[in-house]
Image (cartoon, rainbow, N blue to C red; front, side, top):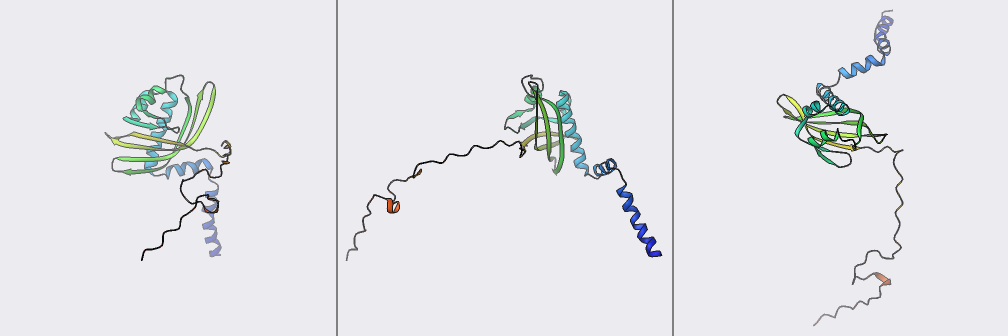
Length: 199
């Protein structure tokens, strides 16, 4: 009887855990994240919101005056160019941005933040979505973290990937030829035998 009671006592917490709603479990997982990830996730959320709402003040508090941005297309922009792009009508305007911090490494006063992003932009009435990974480098200055470097890499979905055209093969017999080199039986050059050694 005592054995049965012990078995029931160990089974009750398992049933209680299964009965916890998914929302509560998600909140518990968020609370279990390392404090560094939580801190930089908050900064990334502010950054995303500032771009979508065209909040220049917040953006300039997050980005260092020496900030350099390397976009997924390889364009390099300074902080002033990033801020100016928010107000240019010809540029794609952000509709929504989501950054998810995955890893944070801190070396003295520098933090390297890696994560994933989903960016939706609108241009000429057309909405475009880009997904990828990012690396942001922060420096701790006057008790706050400011971003000094940003690099994004777009990840191409397998279904969206365009078919690459097949490479045409060269119909040349020998596309690369070095003159004066013996080419075997097909060679028309005659090789001279070395002279016999002198006695």
